[in-house]
Length: 425
Ligand code: URA
Image 1 (spheres, protein in one colour):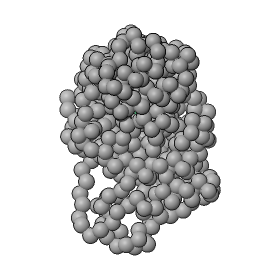
Image 2 (cartoon, rainbow, N blue to C red; image 1 turned 180 degrees about the horizontal axis):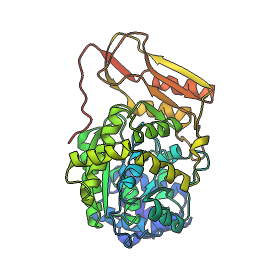
Image 3 (cartoon, protein in one colour; image 1 turned 120 degrees about the vertical axis):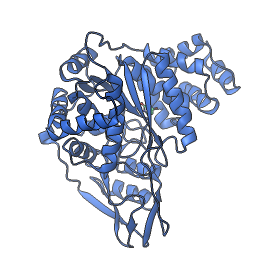
């Protein structure tokens, strides 16, 4: 196989054969194909897409680039939740312990920051000592004992996704249906799960801003899930503004803890409960959303959900007693006029957070655990000129300034009433 011929064929609209795709991806994982050549293929796929058969093949190759987990010996439902990426999205941090405390098993492989969106692992690693990069055997034991754990994509599991994910992040090839499907579904299928719920974010902070784009992606994700025997449910949730009150690093973990302790923001709780209910119903633990909500509320009220979070983080070396950050620098962004918040440019808010140390512009960028923002108002709120919209914080004055510059003009205010619905289905 000549990689340049494969790229040229894709660029002329032809599909790639199974053998060529296998040689290309395995060659990249084994360092026989370099980043520049792989970027050529990613760009060609980004521009010309892939057929359904090519996508199935790519997912299969990515799964088999590493090992797969097996949980057949557990007599319980094994499942997971995954989001296509957003700003302020800490739902995995809430759903994994919450459902684990309900008796489900969730061997969750989570991601790092991608483009303007935050990464569950980066947030979790703000807890001193927390290890996401653990051997697969050890991880499977943790899941057996604690019902859940949160693992990074490692050299053992889906290494193809690990390398491609990092390259997509710096080559402008993130928002591509086949590449997102390959990335998400290879990891999820390799987990050995029976069921999955996908949080399809739609709106100004999503890789899929319109419902049409999001639907195309969602249907492909579901089709691949079912093709590989994983029952897959979809929830379309609104990403026109950051989710919750806080977005960033440790501040999101703290907000997730609030959610698990019954003090979470309404929007975050609603998205978590909706996603969790799909898995409660799939597993037979609840007959409908109302029953699921009532079971999950009890687990929060009696402390089981938060206790599970403590057990899970401790099992992966995290010391919650040591996790508190007081950022050295803080700046407020205020409303320039009176009126009602109409919209937010949430992708730009995400890029502002990246500037402040919550994400990467280059592979080796160092993140800042103290960084983030507090969102004082949401779309539909009435504000007065001079009133605080966001408080931004981090440990580096220059980075804070750059972040604030990006976030400053992201809110549109006028006199019209607006109502935003949290879900599209
Ligand atoms: N989450 C992933 O794991 N991969 C993507 O490409 C997007 C979101």
